[in-house]
Image 1 (cartoon, rainbow, N blue to C red):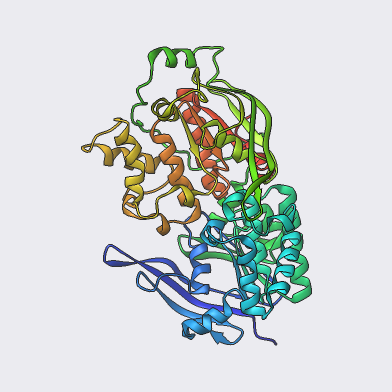
Image 2: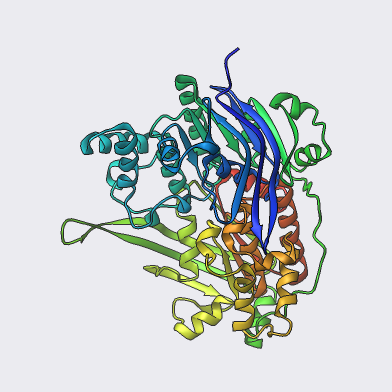
Length: 518
């Protein structure tokens, strides 16, 4: 009988927290054969991503320690030198990270980032590597791939960045691909294409896949076996078909029961209400107008947002990218509007233009009865307290050098909604409201999972108790149980305070939200 490609025995990973060692993954064991797909599922913070980072030995050595045995192709990864591990990472083991901007260099164009891998691990010259980079971008369906090779990551949408990361991970045709939420930011058509591509490469090369996801639909279609994690431990490991037919562990049963069904919100762990900080002080006339019948919170008419395309040595403008063309919408108090489209269709650009994070070329934007496009700096800052945005990539919107408690407290203190004597209590309540522990306020963003970081951004958006929240894929990074809790929370806030929502989402995630809003 042949040896498995990957054999994990009693993996335990601990982080140093306040002078002690906190176990995050405990006594985890599994095997993975060539050509096999193992899905690692569990709620946000259960240790899935830490397991992947432990396998790749990417955790900081001073703040973490890993014990156990990690056999990959008859070599124990924990005994290899840093140089030996570098020859394996990106070559024999590829990884798709949960948040693409944590693995893409923002000051290096994507063509160079792909060719760098090809030249280092496959020995290609510059021309060969560039041609192969183009083929990889076309393989993951990047539109106009040839013209985008020299673009930088920040000029791509979140979904397209994820496709670039997948292209880099597949560049060396690895024996093992570790995919941490690889399709979270992709719309349903692109997701299907990427999953089919992974299956094809798996069949051609015998590639094994460790698939980390909270999307049970992806698990059902991709995984041969499924390992369910809860609080850092494996609670059930079975063939996927058997697990879906009859889950044995109570948590597995709960996880599958929480999968949304259209028209029937099946959420669990209902959030308990608590008093939020008082809303920001606004003009009484504006507030009354907004809350009265017939006056929208947001009205957009004929919005146009274009971006210049520059080329040549002098970087002259040679064209225009028509990101948003003639978009109009209206949202009343207590109403939810979903803006749905595929990756790169202009959803995020619309949200940023509404809050004037970018300057639209034309159109009318009326927020709480006031003209956003005519507002000067001081007035604009005040208007933005009435409309908060939850960004698609939580890591981009959290300061990595600031503790999360400070990040949530900052807007409360800046706008006079709390003071130093009670801000810690307000932060604790907000963290509790989004399913996090109050003691987590002392941690930094990198010490949280991707789903937990998204909850932090939601807590910060709720802090000012705005009239409108623009949510750019606000629950896409959350597992089904937490997603149900957050949606229930947002429904409760909408019912109690007339909060309006503009959801920007790919089609796949919109199906989940349809369970809560009709």
